[in-house]
Image (tube, rainbow, N blue to C red; front, side):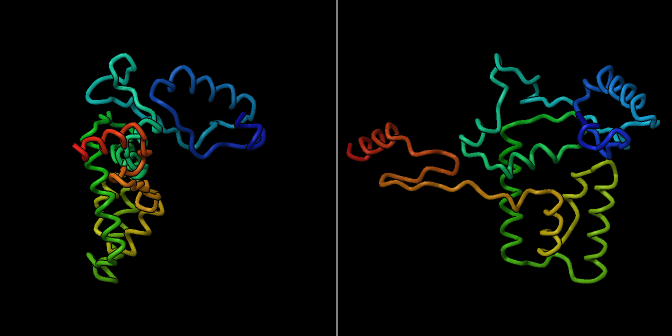
Length: 204
């Protein structure tokens, strides 16, 4: 499939997958593709992520530790918070996905947005800004050390530039919906049954 897109003589710059794909799947893919193209390698960089744990356990539907992005968005979790929670642990480290982690990521996203919106300056232009940009680039070049990149001190403009790479703060937030009885948080649709109960409680 890849060669159909890039041509029989081409190579892939970045090939990713889970740690369970290293052997035999990707070893076989490399061997077959190299035989077909005549190159010594098929991909210039192979990136294999560790398995994702949920609340300290293996992801499992029977244990209630399996979520889809749609499930989490329906609960009011922002896409930006979910993205940050998934990328801020190094891809080769064991990541433990948790509700508390999502809350922490949501607070971090909100701080970034307020910081960018206010246009505050945490670093002076010139040498310090250059140092921050170099620190961010060095972390990303260091085997995608996103945690280190996030920690680079930057002013609002530079933070926006960093987010062009991270793709977090610029994601659209979930809109809230207001009804006659209250406000449904972003990601939650007003439910007539819930509204009826709220109105009954208010009347009581």
